[in-house]
Length: 103
Image (tube, rainbow, N blue to C red):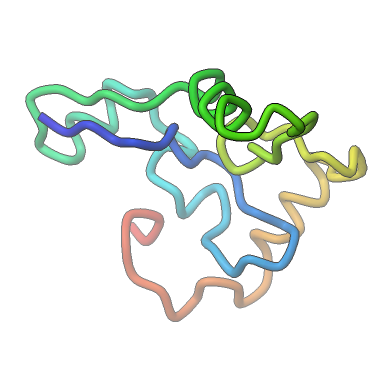
């Protein structure tokens, strides 16, 4: 079994954190059941985005907005389009990486 203290990372962070593109993220293109199978786990449990946000707000009630874009694809600036995310996947980005996205 695998239990994650974070939600599944399905989308790239476009605000300066160097991380894989969506097609390189195992949860970016597979269902939870498919991820479980790919990892060889008997079961898989993720933290929910809602519970993660609630935990942050419990610690600091002044938090009005929480950037969970890498979990839910909702970018706080409102200007990140599917076309932009697709553009990030092009070129040589990730060409030297190995991992799930490299088949």
